[in-house]
Image (cartoon, rainbow, N blue to C red; front, side, top):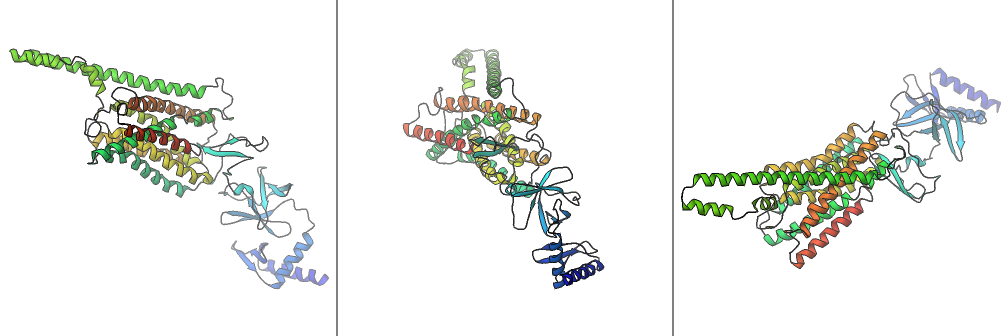
Length: 495
């Protein structure tokens, strides 16, 4: 034993003579820090013996701290009192200066923790050990609960035990975000949204009338189902208003009240808009009559005058035909430009929130949520594009602008999210109120558009394309309507 101690002393002296410090092990190999701060392997038998002696003589020491902390890539390692290297499990990669040591080490069951300079627990991992916090931030369940992100907030629902349920942290959540992935998928969402909204505009140009009719019916009714389902998924707004960080609402039906406000605003917009258009059509009719009366001096004038006045309900007919598509494919579809604009307004509000939701979600949920959002945007694009396509006039410029606005709005929401991703607090009171209000308001707009402008106008209002359609076309349209509702409701499970 005396010989081993003497040998260890000589070895340590030789190491220090070479200006090495912070010696530690990676597996069976001893490493020390040289003058340049780089790790240098010390592979001699003597050094290995010295290490083993040092470990033996200090094994009984109270390991209340880990010292000489350093980084290997993005991971942080420190030295135990026995000379072994351990990893410090941190929630995020430190960007500033590392603390020299972590003190106050203690155990929670089989896990070991130390305190950082701010007094927070950090887990200490030995070689080959892992931590549950690095496995799945998403963990499909927390104590039997199903969890998902919405607007940067993790929501858990299910039958988990109360002690396992996560209480929200009302401050900013620190997470690792894969920014290159988010930037790349922004263009994926842009392409998918554009494909969905412009595809119906191309289909109505098909030269085959029967195929065109069937394709238009399928897309329109599928889109109606999508919009209806999206409208009634305002549970996301309810999640915001029921968040514990917001506190208890004095009025429990706040979400439903805002949804009703959205319905009322949509109704007022269309009603006032139609009244304005009717008044304008009436003035134009009177002006034409006046010009005809003053410009005619013979019996021909009387005949023309009678002919002009024959259709007395001209203003009402003007309203009914404001959005008629009188092409060969759909001669009876009443679909006003005003109603489509109201529909797009609701979709835009919703799509901005969708883009923000996607970007600020944790990485473990990002890929799953991305797939959901891609399908969601494609289906919504089909719904909106089918209505835009049937408006009178050519594709340029109005229809193209309306389609482009939809295609761009979700990527714009994603860009906003990436700009504030490190300072975004999904549990902040102002954030919860703003996002919840916008979500509920857009839901109300889509309820009006989906039920009145799309569903009722196509199926039960006079002039609706499905009211007197052949039974085969009615069957196809009904199946498409149910399919759109079911698929979007299914996507809502992960959205």
